[in-house]
Length: 265
Image 1 (cartoon, rainbow, N blue to C red):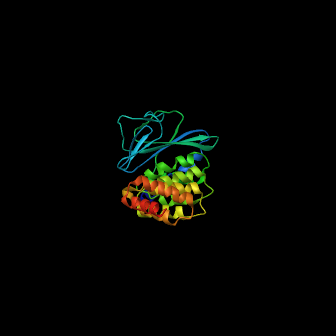
Image 2: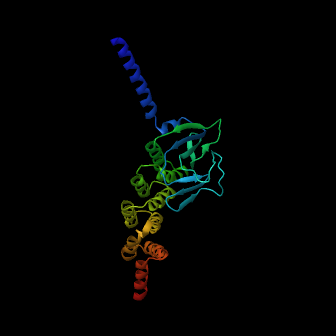
Image 3: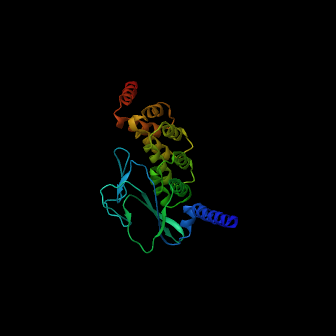
């Protein structure tokens, strides 16, 4: 009887070990095994997100269009706006990640050639997307940023800030990081955007994107920062950009500043 119990316990341990080993295989290592072709995986997204084809809605009134129509070569839809999961297609060419396609909801179209990794955890999905944004020099790097912001229950803004600050990353990737930081409401993000604007060592275009991102903060949370930039920045281009976006807010504080500046002339 004791021998049987030991055998059962050993078998259970082996089963758990096998499951752990499979889980330990990162998305990256599994994607790397594919030389050419598409790799698919799905993950949980935020509850305020829905999509159809290349049109994705998030938050209260925000909409992101990745194309001109609702047709998708990868996904089939039965409803106008489907709530999850998030679906990513990684296109491999000659062993490199050449492209990334992202969808919300629907079901995979039948494919005899695509490699399907199934559903991965939200943490795995976020880690993979952010690592791609931090490491790839292809367009897929900037394409990975938006879906990373929609992964459920994972905090991504610190990594996006790191990408925005990294001068070794392509400019388009960095400006994408700054743009989506601006879409993520919260004091921490506003502070991070402030830090980007005042860092004179950063590329000016990246800093301008941070100014724009501040102007897009919900409930006009970025207005005080924009006013401070107009008053204190030593870069005339940055001051001009901040003033332009302030004027678009129609905030009384912005109008007061504009009146003050015009009165001093």
